[in-house]
Length: 279
Image (tube, rainbow, N blue to C red; front, side, top):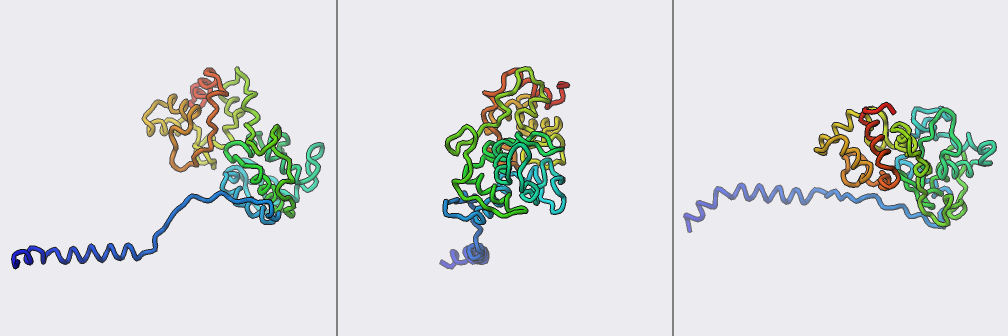
């Protein structure tokens, strides 16, 4: 008995210490993380309430990767897309020969962004109902109200906007440029026609929601994946869900490029991105 007590006595401080830290750890408030809940957009929301939801959608769906919010800068800002601050005031009368008012202009800009290009900006924005934003009909309404509030007053309720072109429901619209890609288009043209530049920057240091597309960065990522640069690019284009780069949102890259591009086009695009072709 005494021998057992002597053997146990040295362990008492350790047991007390462990007990203290376990109790202390359980006393500290625990942090619980959960993914953001999908915004509930119901028909009874006012335009002002929808506008507040739209502000969240614009931030979370990557719109600000290309657009800026720079007070007093007018349409020109420091982004790859037009400055959004004051857009409703600038487009109160819509666009001559096209959208006659700010709501129609905003709807057109989201559904068919290539229909009217702001001077000085390229045609790089995919439809908001397609990747990467993938807005549903209710979300489009909320975003229109939010943009309307930037220099104006939100006025649209759910159900008042037209549905996406060619759709009787709120189904996503495929990027318009993709089906029309010419079979003989070179890599540089494919990069633009497929809308890649809407999410990917061509050089390091430029803000984008997708990985940079310069050859050195691609080769580095391929090394981390332990495959050749050519195989890495082919997989990224044809099966983007197979490997997710850290630091970038998942599920935004369209998964159907493998059916929209021919083998020759894929080869041309890969060669261009790796700097092995002049077109």
